[in-house]
Image (cartoon, rainbow, N blue to C red; front, side, top):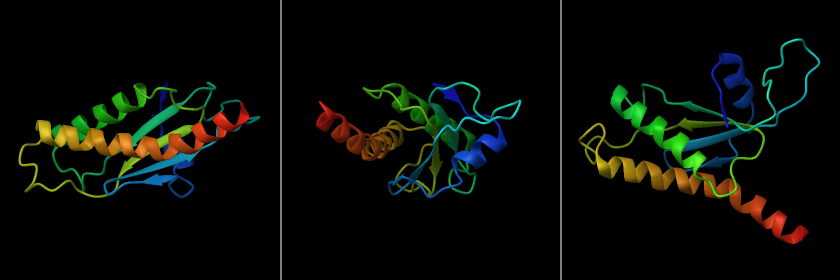
Length: 135
């Protein structure tokens, strides 16, 4: 799995509507298209993953870093792995600071992980259903 790093890669991956949403996250996907330019946007045919965590929704850097680590770890642990595409996980609302007082508490990590697994599950289920019908 490759990491999305440049602004143009993020813009390309987030150009369309999200393919899945949960209360706090949105998942964007863009197909890797072969370009004839000298420098392709996604030079390696692999799964590309990026994370967008606006300060508006996660004020503390500790929280943003913990969420970012959870995104990459849940994607890495997917049973079938990520299909070849550009994927961006975007935080779209705040985790309640009243419910999660600590910036990096275990309950916050657990809530983030469960919601990310649900997000990946919403994308993986239709793909698994198509594969099972082909057999």
